[in-house]
Every structure is written in C-alpha cells, then in structure tokens.
Picture: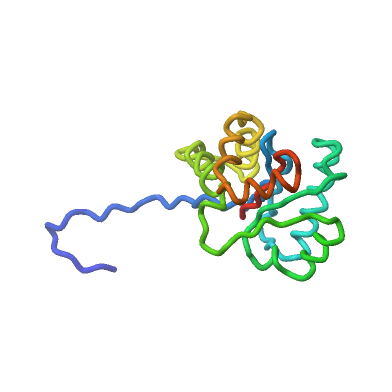
Length: 181
C-alpha cells in the first residue's frame, strides 16, 4: 500500500519481459572463413577440459574444411584466460604441435574478433527479438556462414605487423584462428 495525495497521477505498471539470455560462442576463423563456431550450452562454464574438447572439435573441423593444414604448423591466437593457459590446455597444444601467438594483456589490437567480428554481429542482431535461444543461435550461425571472405581478410590484416610476420614465417601462408568468449 502506498500513501499518496488524491490528485497524484496514477502509477503506471510496466509489463515485465524476460531479458535476453546470453550465448557464449567460441569462433575459430581464418582468411578463408569460419572453421568452427562452438556454442557453450546454457548453464555450462568454460574450463580447461571443455576448452580441450573444443580444440578436439576444431582439429576435426580443420581436417574437413582445410585438408592438409594439420600436416603443417597450426597457429592459434587466443587471450590469456585461465582455460587457455591451464596446464591441461598447454599439454594438448604441445601434443599436437600447435603454436600460440603471444597475447599481451589489454591489447585490443591483438583481438580482432572483439572488434572485427563481434562488433558487426552485435549490430546485426541489435533490435531483433528471438523467441528462443535456438532462434538466436540460428541467426548467429547464419550471419557467420554468410561472411564475405574479403571481410575476414581485413580482420586478419588488422593484426600488428609483428604478428603477421610470425604467421607468414611460421606457416608460409595465412592460416589463423581467433578465440573469443
């Protein structure tokens, strides 16, 4: 019960709507396209074991989409989050001989997915309403599936020259991946 003056305006009641659920996606991409889009199921968190499982799926996706790539060095670029730097993950990477580009803390210029992929994706999804989480995921997958190769090349080329030189020297070609969570 609220006390108010009889001439006070009537209090409006707003209809409460459920807010949008967040969806965590890990994206592996190179200049040719998205190699793997991994969606973390609701209620799960990313840890080293889950990340290694994602790397297993990435290895299989590379085998299917980029035949021959696994016979040469694979270079990943991801941040220093605990699942990426955990011993279990480091052992996985060493077992398969995958190299990690250094990622200094707070270096937005070394995180092209943050700006080059996820910014435009957020703008694309902005204002859309989804009935279910699956509808949101479907729209996100559709957006990634329809990315133009030139758009991806611009993202790759936005890396600092030092990182690009390391990729070219190590791979004799531009093969690259970014993990964003």
